[in-house]
Amino acid sequence: MTVVYMGTPEFAVPALVKLHNSGYDVKLVVTKPDREKDRGKKLQPCEVKAKAIELGLEVESPENIKSNPEFLEKLRSIAPDFIVVAAYGKILPKEILELPKYGCINIHGSILPSYRGPAPIHRAVMNGDKETGVTLMHMAEGCDTGDMIAFAKTLVLEKTTEMLHVELANMGAELLIEQLPLIAEGKAKHIPQDDSKASYAAMVFKDEGVIDFNKTAEEICCLVRGFNSWPTASTKLGGLVMKVHEAKIGQGSGPAGTVLAAGKEGLEVGCKGGSVVFTRIQMPGKKAMDVSAFLLGNKIEIGTILG
Image 1 (cartoon, rainbow, N blue to C red):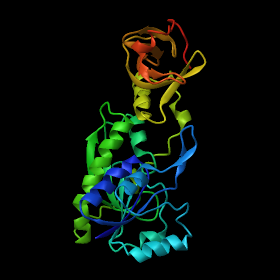
Image 2: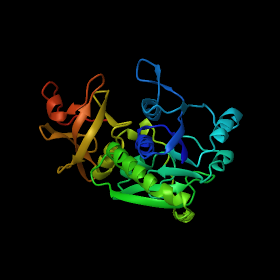
Image 3: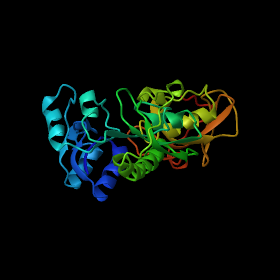
Image 4: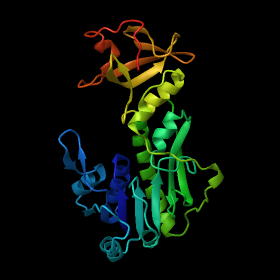
């Protein structure tokens, strides 16, 4: 069966590899255009494009897929059985949704209808959810509104967004390979979503990662895990931005934002109802390091105010 695959970030790589290794004829891989990355400002391909080139697959990265007759004609000439989408980053227009023989199939990083939208994994961790998962769905017009085919769940526990991205990406790839034959045979499920239970996972922005010490330690720890590894939670130490990569709930209490202890256990800071302990931090121009290592060459006075 022929497939057009549409995806952009690392989350979408496992499903592409699984399709290729399972014998599906991936005729075309569609990604978002190359973007400037890092300080060099050089154009670099996204993770899916890099993997597709490595696998020897044809890639296109159109700036616009709406009102793009050349791209639409390309898809029509392929006449795909499936279009598979995973974190592509663009809404597919009706003419593309209706093009493949068996429809457009999407891998989404939540248990729908919860967390429709671009940042479901970040939001689940930030909100302190106990479990999350991945949904395979028939695509329809609208944002993640199509009928569900199958889903898989996992516990969040102390996992970071980065950890869950890897886990859910692999779970989604497995679901895809399991369900594609059933879809082609007309045996796959069509489970309508309950729109009354829907929630939206808005895109994550860096300024959301600024730590508010008027929140509880649990809320702060969820923020730190939710922003790990991007865009990273932060506060200020001596006027400098201090990124916080790891944190845990403390045992002490004190004024919000006030350093209560600094030692081998970490940097303990007062917050609402108790304290939070930062165990791994990063100062400007430096690599991330354990607080115990940072304190070997730097002193943080008790009573210092962060933020």
